[in-house]
Length: 445
Image (cartoon, rainbow, N blue to C red; front, side):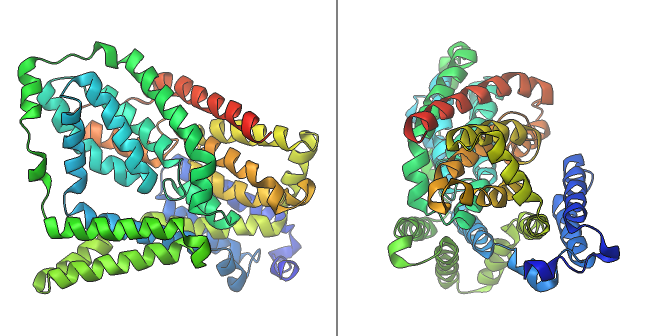
């Protein structure tokens, strides 16, 4: 199929260079942020087919529908459950658990954000937590920047711990055949260490100097967290269904189910329960609202990107690069892993980590024969995940959650400058990656 797929390139041009040019132009336009990235990816994927690098059947084979289904299912689950008010409740509860002390709230909101991000996508997490953070900081009359900065870091760190926490992990898990339990077993231990160290660094930089008056603290303690709950029936239904979905992820292998099936079934059941409860004119409104909350831009960005990257893979570039990287590292799995870790971290701070990871996955797959087969390269997947997810903290453009928080902050009169963020964030990101380097050396290499 591959030979056939690359034999129809116009004018007999080399399919490797044609596909590479399309990829490079696609990346350049995405990085320029002049055109919506979903549009750019879809145009790039169309060009791969039109110029003959791929035919349509081959292009469709390049789409990872497991990733698409998992993302869509989780977005639907979050859309419905957020209407119950559970996430706002958690944020207020977190502030009160810290007795309304600013430094304690800074710590607990980081932990809350990290835990939520392990089970929700990062953008959704910050969209839920940041507005409540602004309200709490306004009541305490303390600077909000340290809290928002900390929540960016916590969302990207916490999202690294599980299969479903960060889009790069969803991509890696689906295409490398790794289960939910694999990510928890191999990544969660080091992520806990990284999160603790990160919280300590942020406390040293900002937390120890945060103060509030007794009156302001009393105002936060007077907030009624239960009033944040808008629908108790929906809350119970959401907790039960999300709990079952998590159990499904854990038991996916013995059940012989893919994550997409589990997420989509959970989403369908929660939609059914929600509509059963509101079996009136509100049911149709809720359905439209739920599907409207799905980030279709992200979904179609993934679809287009899968096809573009598949075209480059079929063209042969990634196989060539894989062989060169193995040769450059002397055929050492450890040296290759460290190269992937640090390159992923640095580059993911500069370019969006989703397209970067999508490109790296087939490259790493092509290394398998050099290291004795697919079973022997599993540590390389952990290197890619840790580097790409944590590297996204390095600059404002490193991950979608970063830009989301910055946008909300600017709309609320809180300056969020690129260089200011980078001067604090990049060194902290390097510390987290260095911790991962030591962990990978100790556990795998």
